Image: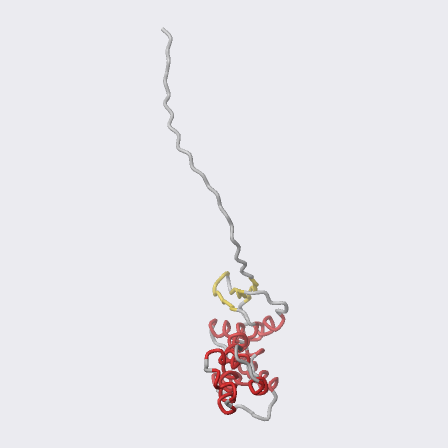
Length: 189
């Protein structure tokens, strides 16, 4: 802040609000109501800065916050119990998700939510066999195995694979050469 006043130090708690003060007239440095308004605006902007960092956690039921659990429960038709803890609500969601399987896409969705990584299910990879590919490192596959054992048809077997994609920059050098040859036959008479 270029023009800093004691009142600004007392009121402005938001870093974004302090940045805002650089773009407004210095006369607002002593305006009590205006400083409170700028601080409110700054607090909202601070939350917007934090949102992208926490949004990835909302894509999995295991790491979802209270606000996204409401959306998850709506998706699966669960009436939210407001007295239940976050952990109970997550457990109810995972149980409901575990019961709603009927095709490979549904199994992919449940495992993706359970493991926090993209999962692909490929059918008919062998006789009475399907494969499950987890795209990302997972330390504990026991929950996925127990889920698959519970939901797969009894006559099918599955293969569970984990794949971590690593990108690397590689220089490939190649060369080419063109040559022309003429053959002469010399006979001595």
